[in-house]
Length: 451
Image (cartoon, rainbow, N blue to C red):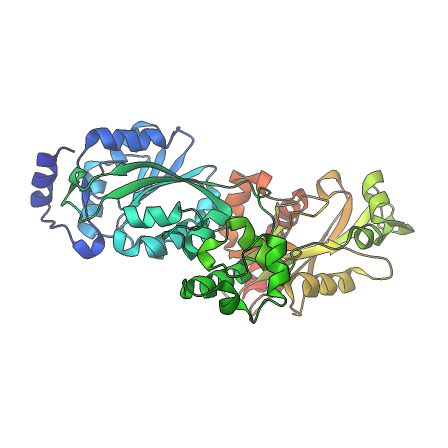
């Protein structure tokens, strides 16, 4: 829309821009086309647009063939978009973006996020939509220039902050261009920046305990003029030796540490590593025949190498709300690393049965002990990695405590989201997880497990 058209439309629908909602309407059509072009959209994309306003970007996005979910908090603007831009590929959601549930986006094959983030809530919006793990593969948004400078800052600069490290830990952030106040009506008091964010390769940086890292960042940057040793000294024994190993100056402040040094510091306190290779490969499993009768016992490497039939358990844990807990397997796993899997599971080892293995795995991986119900048994096949699998279900009332050496990431998801996610992105899951979930759904015990 041109400037005159925006003014006339706002008068027509009786909307006066509300400062607390960050309502600044883009009127530069060339810039709108440039922004959409930078997103490299195709008809295969599902675009989430935050704060579409009068649809300056929405109409151009629709021209690319992409589907659009426009999230607009202002009821009057949402009604305007539905009427003026009525389109079979457009859904307008009249909701506060901070209340939007991101998880159903996993049901879409490729998700892009575009938006002019309201300056007054940009930080919580970033925390919500640029979390990890995320179903979104590209973020393109306009931010207040000072916030954008923090996200792209380098160590040792005034802008470098805890938010910088948190977002750069899992994402690559690129400043595309500056945007002057003059392209908006009303004009904001500050300039803006357009940022492009994409996920990092999960193996680009070492693993670490994200919760611990966030605690270190909070304490380190809370008093940024304070030496880091004094801010976190109670967590770090032998600071001089650790600082020397990581290449950190003994009197360094939080802003002096690189992303890699922050990760290294977290790992000095709580090393992120899987089981030792010797222990890992010395696990012994029962080798079974086509009727699941034990033939002999063999080491893990032999069982997997020969593709021998063996035993395993998968456990599906539900919340009181009926959502199922899924885990993303750790990067060091020899089978299906960084793929999503059942709540907990693993092999049945020598000298134990299925029930014992299920209780052990639940304790080792999630730190919980809850009653388990046997659901159904799957036969060994290529899709189960030649494992006979007993599926169990249970319900948790307390907090799950995932073993960070076993689990890269995790979360609760509604059964409907899991169904859609597996249909849209089957490669995200282990083959056995897909088989177990399908079997669980077919046997009609979901309501009993989640009640």
